[in-house]
Image (cartoon, rainbow, N blue to C red; front, side):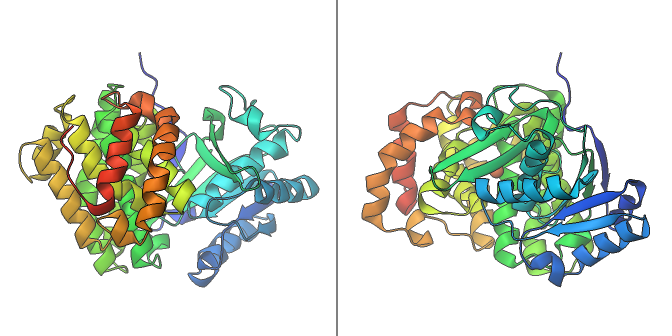
Length: 384
Ligand SMILES: [Fe+2]
């Protein structure tokens, strides 16, 4: 029997930020990335709500993309000095992921990142503080997932922290906060959300609930992503994309991901390709590889009305990627050909070991993963 995870308190819809009034306590830390939440006014709104509820506030700012171990340690130090009883992750997934890891170390100061990556390595949290996630991008679904990814730049290691302890106590999914998201971030994060839904739907964990949420997310993304890029101020469209991202988070928390993510993780680590863009570059090839083992992409083609086969669905993803102005090939992204081909074998080896690979509907070999990397350089179609 499957347990549906991600079932903490969730509010969504335009204006749902006001639900923050429901939390009570003495001290709160707001963790943010750069300037965007200051410029778009969402930090001020969060501060005003918390101040009027009587909270004393501290802000931790400067969480970078791919948040680092050193940033997490700095944040945890601030937490231990200030002793908050609520932690608010506000912004893109980096700010929220970093805040989750800061929270774990605040609760357990001796916890190492090596320990945290072990199964069951994060002991129970919430003896000192509880956690609110308020995303301002529509991609990872981190507000609803048991995940945080932290990078140790000195050791060149990415730590995927996976624990249901990291599920936020309260998530607020308010599309209003996404209106200032730039077009390229809207496109990349939206295609990341699409990849979550697609991979969860075809994964080797069959789950009716995850399937329904994945399909719901896919439909919303095909109907709304281009509108969100063209009309960034359309609140309803922004809310639909925010909901789709959250649905994807629910779906993959329950049914996991596949080799599009395994391949994309290496492209981010080795070449700095933004996560959603990397997923979009590999997804059509992964669909063509997997459709020899599963007919579930046929359902998705029918769902969005683009045809009846996996190939029809792969082409619909390519079309959406193109219309979103996301590069169609690694060459178009601008990576040097020699550097790419020198790296593909090692990236394929690492991708094979990625935890997502175990949930893919077709078990790949290292040579097949390497062939996908080679093919996407110029957008060739490989017949596996
Ligand atoms: Fe992702």
